[in-house]
Length: 179
Image (cartoon, rainbow, N blue to C red; front, side):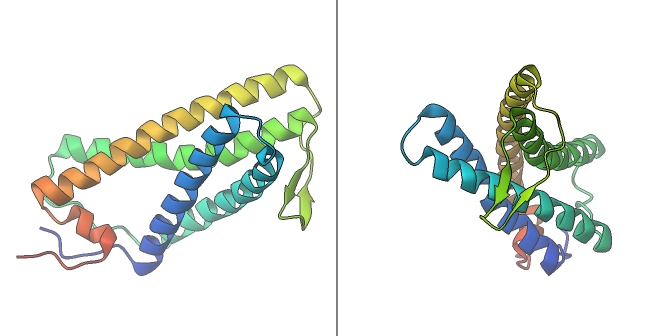
């Protein structure tokens, strides 16, 4: 059982981004299901928080590089450790792909990304309806893949915390393992 926890900065980034990402995914799903009066306001907030999410994942990578994560317990088989590393790489890829594809999609649609009514991001693609359609589909597919990755991640964390009780979940919770 490991006695090392993730650094406090890594735990704060993990849990705050988990809340932000889950909120963004649920908001995105809600927006594509209806065209209610609140839709445009929600879309503007979704765009703004998407920029926050992109900045947060950049900060998270910096924290990850600065503070080495604790090793997995030796009881975790090597293949499972490799799968864990690969799934984390996919999670980081999705954390970048979601906001970037949303930004590119809005740019291709000719719609500005206004961040909390403070400033607008520059349009980086020419307006192109076909490209917008592709990026909209891509953004949706990445969202569904992201949801699947998150469910696997949560399932693995619960497996380690409730069934194996090997300290892996406690490392991210910041609690001391029980002997």
